[in-house]
Length: 348
DNA sequence: AATCTCGCCAACCGCCCCATG
DNA sequence: ACATGGGGCGGTTGGCGAGAT
Image 1: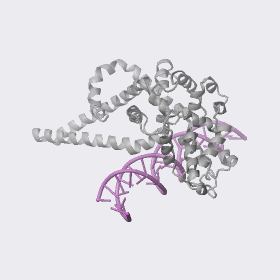
Image 2 (image 1 turned 45 degrees about the vertical axis):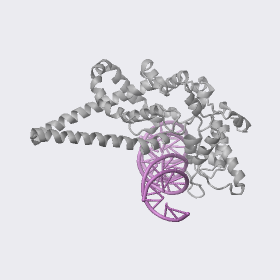
Image 3 (image 1 turned 30 degrees about the horizontal axis):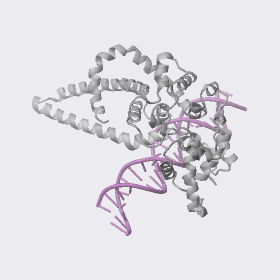
């Protein structure tokens, strides 16, 4: 006997969200905070299932979401973290707090996978070529081929291990520069058995947001998310107030609004909104949230992200031990590592 | 100009985990 | 210990826009 759907299929709206729905949802969450999704449709009158509301919030309306092109560093981090964690997008996303797991997943599927495939094809082509030359030159028997392939397999295995290690190292070092990975590096150094609470506290102390002008321009407050939304909604309404119920593509909505309001601060507009977000509305009674600055709070608290960190803790503590134990040995292997990484470096 | 193809991405689906009674 | 339900996660899909023909 399967589980019943999370909500009645009858009368539940599907498809793209309209700005009106977004506003209803956001203002509800503003008032009550995210969570208890099941009650959202009933309390707001939205004809959406609770899951849909949650997804809409976490993937689009949630404060602090960065949209648009991925930077090289983000790309590298994703590749490395994917090598480490596999397709655990939520875990990967927890190291890129401004990106949603859905975004990362999409980016991986549409861009990075192809990129890596291409890379792999190129390298295997080259390998085949080399093998061809070798076999011609040495009149190779099947046994020698087997021996060679075994050696190659071992090398590859070793390379994979090195790659994973290097990925973690790279991720850590990347983070120190500009990406929000401090919780990992800090916890590794100071807190081998880090718990989520401790990690989050570290986040608080290091993350204080955006270091670069770029990240300043991409930081989005919750109000700004709505600010992005509203102008177009208004514009749209002006254009076709009679067709206000039409479902419009939100991607286009946001893009066009972004062009209209390139500055993240759109403060004038925000101020003119009646959606003045009070971050305290997002506060729950957790210690962590109370100790975090408002900006950080708006970014991390009460949402799914921290839980994702929880998920990845075991592998990280394992990896950290691995790293630390092997730190010295690694030095001697760096040359080998570099060889293994030359291929991937060329990609960037 | 019209049609076709492809890529992107928001959203959905179904499974799983975990909290609660 | 078990059943149930809510929420989270990853895979997949469908619609739309852009570029190619």
